[in-house]
Length: 214
Image (cartoon, rainbow, N blue to C red; front, side, top):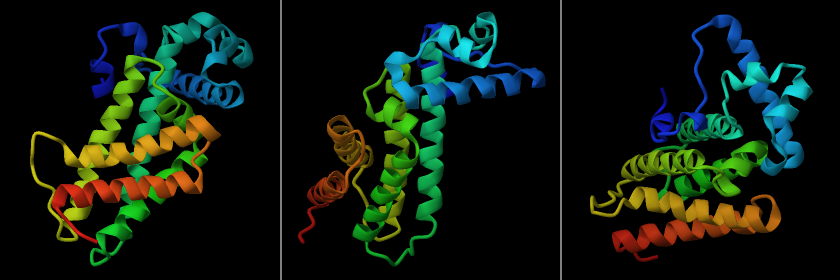
């Protein structure tokens, strides 16, 4: 069971896992078609009866693993969170440790924006406003874990974020994510101007937290 699934007391909001190998292709098909539906018409247009019709599956087959539409959304949100984290980890491995922290920050923000640009479902579920408590937890879980990644990247460049009652690493990521959210709300995508705004906001917060001067 995932950490996100355990955050919700309502089992209808989480996908039911199957240990049977023959069920996995059908679950994968359900999630793939659900992604297509969200891309085509947004979250509000999604329904399990319509999904079943498009796939030619009995509704009961889908309800067996996804009792509500929110269970589908939460499973997709979890996958996008994991995909974003993996992408950023891969990108950061190729940034030289001697590169300035500002360079590392720009690389991280540009990589995150590129990921969202290639994954409209991530935009819809993570930036478009949490659909359920589960998708909210998915986003906050991502911000917390990416905050730790940002902390490590800065420490490699000689900058140690102080350990305080405030999670500076997570708040740094939140500054950038807020810029992404607003851009998606206003423009349906992350524009270059809002990507730059994310970099500026994160840089300013780090400089203020560490007492740095330009």
